[in-house]
Image 1: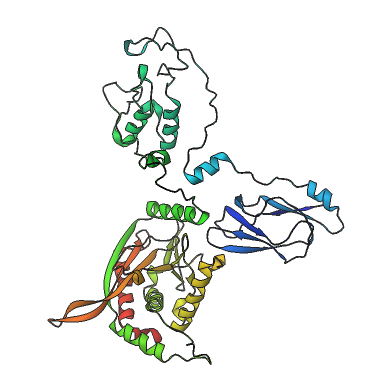
Image 2: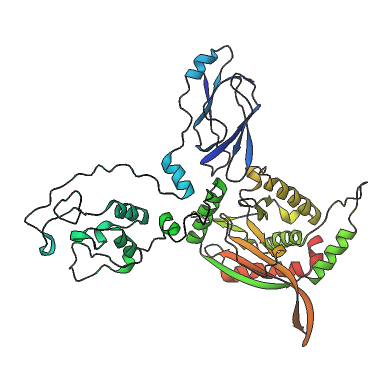
Length: 459
């Protein structure tokens, strides 16, 4: 009996993946544990191992196929002694073919609409609208009669894209026909028709139809044809857009900003790096960055303020025992947040070397799901780009994220005198469902104490 090899779910949130490469070809013998293919998820490229033994009878999904759903058949494996040709013919699904609608959506081009099999209804001749006679040709010159809403094909498509009920739109075309400009007016709240049961003089409140964002077609219409290039979204960019949109819509964010004096930290960093042991080639065993201190300080601060080391769930609060700190790493096409597990227990040098390894493998898309999923908080540092301060979007299931700006020399007042100091601004974004204002302020205070007194991180 042939065995179907399915597209695996390489992470709990994975729904589709790209089949990047087959490492075996049809007719090859396969043992359990052999790496047979490479799959691209939204965050990484991962190897797929065979579970069963046999002969690869048929490759159903060719290399380079994008958006293959989880659990779809991608290949057929013939058991030992089984007829390979017979097993190949027993494949239960064919390779996915590009669909015009999906391809059009990926590049922002309107997909061709299928023909609409509408049921044509004869308008009652005894009930002309507002004293007007019925249209000369109801199938071509559509209007609103009885329960039938007459509209142009373009108007219907725009209404579908914008989520607008055509029955609420006042038509301005011939014989009250709803046309494209009526939909555009409805998107801004104008040109709306009162419900049928309401008096004609009582217009529908604008708030009843929320304004929709502009469609792809409307956006492209703002620019001259040929003045731009369409770059299709890959899985990573789509996933980032979906998750961050959900975060800003579903998580009530609030922000707390503080300035930290990092003069002692910079001096300690220079001294520690200068005394780092070197190998025979003169390469130091570690080289600490300011961000390594930030990760350690935030991890220890969460241990000092354990009520902030939480994740919100509807059933109850998850109060974490360890500080697993994610660190945002920029990579081509997006970003990823590898996690330093139990960072409160690790030395600065271990954190530093771990982050260098994470960053290198993240940019090559070689991280494993357990290395970037979960965590209890995160750090986003744009200081190396000269950004003074900013706010970051919380990455669920975290309840906090710390945005770190550049350390810069500023004039401060100390003991009534103006002095120069190295100051770094940080902003903590908090999920107000899990962390209240005073609790967030306590966490920021604990972080500032640690970052301004770095010796406390090594005792």
